[in-house]
Length: 163
Image (cartoon, rainbow, N blue to C red; front, side, top):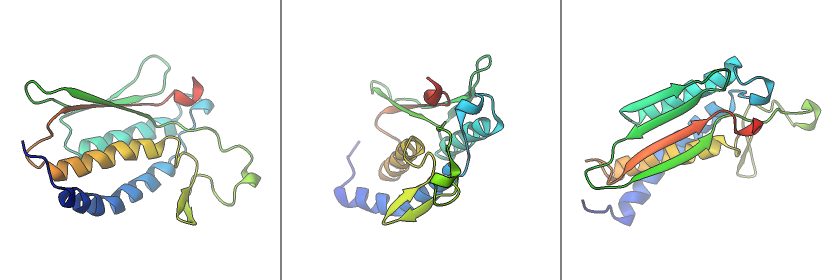
């Protein structure tokens, strides 16, 4: 398998960035506060949104897993080619409560850009982590149209913010 050129990677990144940004904003709009109850509908909706992003990558095995009263987690896999390793990617889709709304310049779950930075609850911790993985996979799939040279397993859980 031939490695893509730097120009091919740059082209793939430039093409992927607008969609990555839009999908990050959509995730931020989901108030997936786990502290308010791990089984909240918004935490479940966040897990489903993550599962959809991963399924849209063409990952052949995407599952939303639930255990007892815990928050849903998402596991997705792309099998490794024979003899190749598998890379594990981790993130979490739950967020901290917004706190005092008077401390925010607007709705904490409505992303806003200021000075080139995106603000909103979860925009960095950790919905950006989710989109870093999704974005990397989008770019790699564009750069390796015949299949990735490694396997990938993505694990995104919904209880990091509650320990």
